[in-house]
Image (cartoon, rainbow, N blue to C red; front, side, top):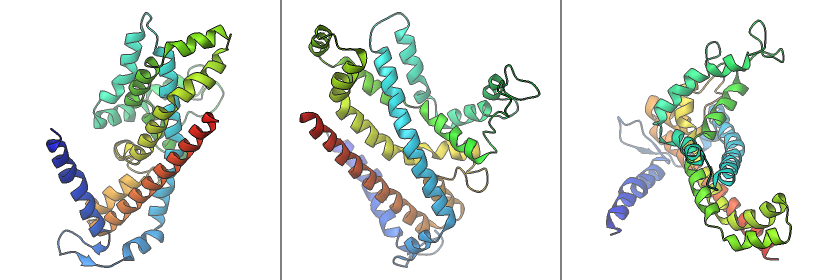
Length: 289
């Protein structure tokens, strides 16, 4: 029964990963046979200013977007885990953006972020005069200002936390009621219940989802940066590692160089997973004490 899955894993994941690993040490343009260059691609990446910008953008995105996504999904799960009027519709609304195709999702946000006619800036101008907000400030220039463009990419990622929300909702609903009844008998406050009961019990799920989001954050940014901002505004404000790899490999036909950048992505992902796993083990040890 596992054979189809194993065949797909080998054919679609392991073999391409091995080929990418081999190409990372070659010079290959798809027209001529690969030429072995050793560590030249990795050395060139270290001196490449565009790659450094893409690496910094990806790290900043992961540090900001991943905690926000997990916290937002956790808050919604704690808010919507009980049965009440309208809860089903609210759960569906939280999950719906995840079901939208990525290109359509990006085009929708391209309209929402339009600085002149987009609904977001139109709402922000409510109560203001001469195109300013009610606070007398210029609305964010989502597609032309570097800082605002990075914030736009992060905002787009927050609404695709539907899968994380569903997992946390299931985890919250599966927690034993006896523990909460005992906490109620002890007159525990809502904050105490969350800190000493809910959070420790859900910590393994939260850790797993955080690791998953860190791994997935490297490709979360591709479609928004490609469709909405095209890697800009200059100088490469929303060029992330995934977009850098795509442009290098498929636009400039530097497959060996793109493979080396992919190898760096894999190593960074593995390092982030190891760090998170060690932090999670320390957290569990602390609560056992």
